[in-house]
Picture (spheres, rainbow, N blue to C red):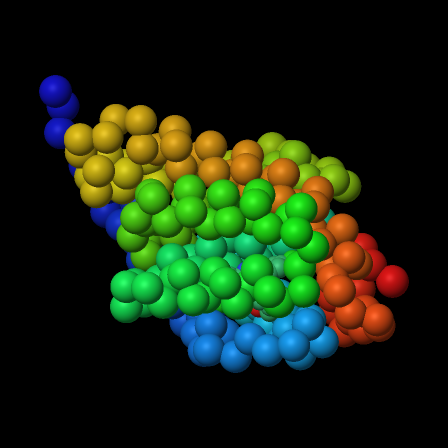
Length: 229
Ligand SMILES: O=C(NC1CCCCC1)[C@H]([C@@H]1CCCCO1)n1c(-c2ccc(Cl)cc2)nc2cc(F)c(Cl)cc21
């Protein structure tokens, strides 16, 4: 069996993505503060707004992204922001918290004001992400692969986006082989999560507008990204 090798060039690409990803992390204390439905909704909109800003900075550090057509850059960000938010939420949810804290966190999220019907698909996704035990490199590359999805609405130059996404998928595939040598299907499972992520995309506007609060106030940035108000 030929040995899987990360080339020097792939090493450089992976380091660039990982460095950008680690540089743009938002405060992890979101798990500690979950109170009334109103406060939770406000917390979510604050966290989501800062996460979009962080996502833009991360995306600007993806090699080649800034040389894409400017309108395509916007289309890619707009098309992936919600998925990136759920991916980030899943990673926060699955962080190595002391045993038992995840249940407490899950309970608090269940009671945060999200409509019952969305709780199940959301936690199914979080748990399926958790089971993958992704390394930081895999998390960073998966986020980059999600952003560089060629078939987002309004993307004009698909081929240019594919040319950026392909090397990311190449490195990610090799990392999966190296980090999970006994799970040949791991890479396929990882990509399968992106399909699950898209389905959450469809829910998110409903989750937001059905949040059990009287007045759903959004920041201008979220109005842009979330197609609400
Ligand atoms: O703030 C959140 N997520 C941010 C978003 C930006 C990136 C960092 C994480 C929300 C919280 C949920 C309770 C009410 C307050 O919001 N949240 C969501 C979430 C709920 C519905 C939607 Cl529509 C989207 C995300 N899932 C979470 C998983 C978690 F582990 C934790 Cl700690 C919080 C989580």
